[in-house]
Amino acid sequence: MPQNEAIFYRAERLLGEGFMQRASRCRVIVFGVGGVGSWCAEGLVRSGIGHLTLVDSDCVSVTNINRQRMATVHTVGQPKVEALRRQLLDINPQADIAVMQQFYSEETAAAFPLEQYDYVVDAIDSLASKAALILHATACGVPLYSSMGAALKLDPTAIRVAEFWKVKGCPLARALRQRFKKQHTFPRHKFQCVFSEELLTNLGESHPEPVVGESSLVVTHGNGSLAHITAIYGFTLSGLILQHLQNCSKL
Image (cartoon, rainbow, N blue to C red; front, side):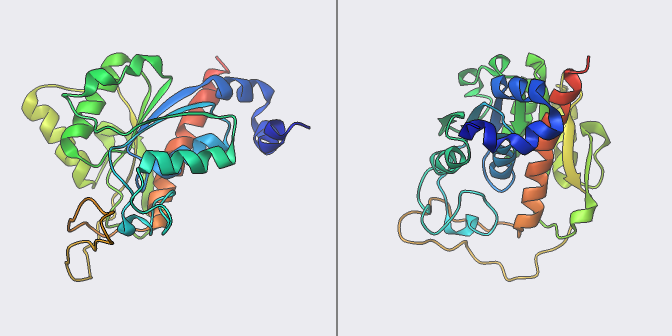
């Protein structure tokens, strides 16, 4: 059996040869490859998605190591998209993985032709950029899957999936809805979100994030977050895409 077929043997056993062929042709763009997006990308590549575009302007910081797929002591200072691309190609060397080390915003949206993709993943943590991407993706009619806030969480059993307007207990979702209502501009179609109603408080003291050498570009007071939460968010997003792709084949 060729290596590439062997890699996806268990996935094909579950979902069938037809699904794997569609997955190999599927094009997904992931915005934000941090704590959530990096694990989503891994879930997609391990499941046979053949074409992936990774979008993130940041470089790996030492404080990313506790929760981001590509963050290790050896990748600190490297562009996140490049570090993650190398790791994903170690999983499937035949995957087509493009990278864009750019910041998505309303002003840069034209550089991202979303209509060329089958799915859009929103794992952005900036409110303005997230709102702009949601409006852009839904206007293009491309299926969108979005991560709400993953910080300040501990309980994995509290993680849920719901349509955006039905998300409960998430400050980020609330802020997005308020923004859309204030601007009288709304998403053009419904989309699924991963979220949790749990909201803890930081118990540790607030210090600027540590800088190691000259490689950490941003010094912030970030909220606490853990790998098991961000990974579940990311893998759930990838699972929603796989489920949709499988269900479409039954139509």
